[in-house]
Length: 150
Length: 65
Image (cartoon, rainbow over all chains, first blue to last red; front, side, top):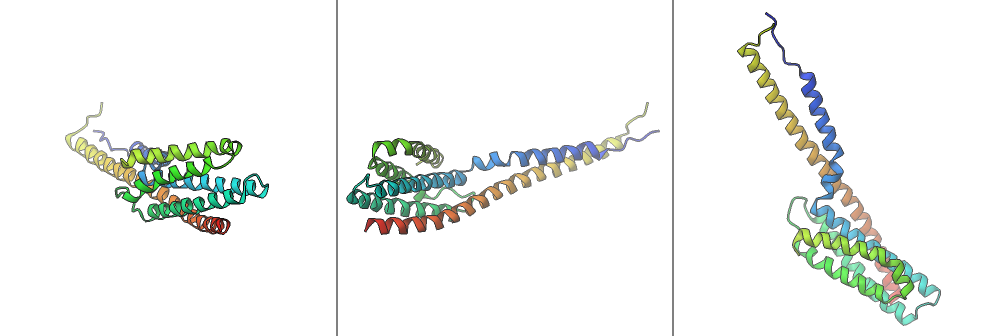
């Protein structure tokens, strides 16, 4: 009588295929993580503020804005950049898997509003140029607030 | 035609169950490793961002005075 011996090859191949599939899906897994969303939002806010700071510097260098405007915008930038740094530090110490820190639900909307305020102080042409980065900030912060229930 | 005995069927079932368990454990481990790698990448970016923010704050402070 012929005895059937279980063949490990097809099942082993299935395991390897599943592991490869999960590796391929790894990028998608992190994209749905609240901590990652918060990290993306903080980076979006920071990048938009850097763009505003650079644009403001160029405008001041070409005398398009006055010295008073230059000082006023930079005072607000100090506040916004410091808040962004606080938000970045909150995300860094946020242990993955734990609920979102309460500070983030307050810091992110404040930053969103402050970034918008600073941009409106710039001339119309520069506001139009910076609009895509501001939209990215609003979207990233909105996603976080939906996730955190803020 | 060859017959499958009860002991063959039992052996098959045990092997398949073990492999399914190994497969499920592997999938969970790979998933967690990918998420951990994502968090580590976020941390690297955030630490670099923190350093850049310190420079930018100093620049803005100087310009606001």
